[in-house]
Length: 208
Image 1 (cartoon, rainbow, N blue to C red):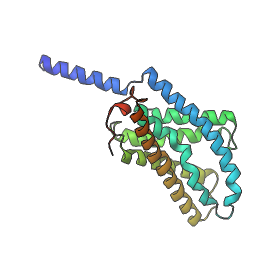
Image 2 (spheres, helix red, strand yellow):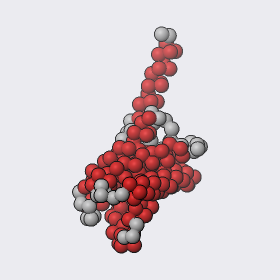
Image 3 (cartoon, rainbow, N blue to C red):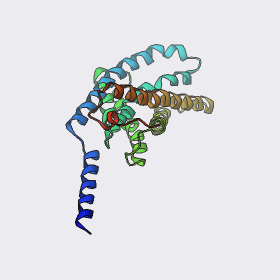
């Protein structure tokens, strides 16, 4: 290998390491997103419980609200673009909401872990190199299907096949629209203001 090849390989490794390695700003921003959405989760939990009686005739209908609980994982990954960002943000958010007090107690932390792992695996499949709208919606859909599976296992195993199918569809659609499309659009808007200039998401032209 020539000296030039060695320099190229070393430079490539340095760029790759910088892209994958966590900086202080990455940690701080991901944590802030997690804490912020932990408070949002707490409020959304209260709203979910308050609206529950309105869906007594058709409980699966409430699934249209679910996407809000899945935003941090997708949003954090789109912003900081580092391995583990989705899990980190969801764990912080779910832990904060549990500490603030929710109907489901500490179980929401377990939910947060798995609902962060699902989109994480989607971004991992792209080797953390693609952060397009398509990938964002796929990651959100994975989180939504995971949420549905957890809810079915813990709460809804007595539901009919029709109700379960309706709930799965509504939860997944809500996740795609709110956590997927919503997060992607939010990153575009924030990038346009310059507040994300410290991140690759703020310095590149956003691709579809």
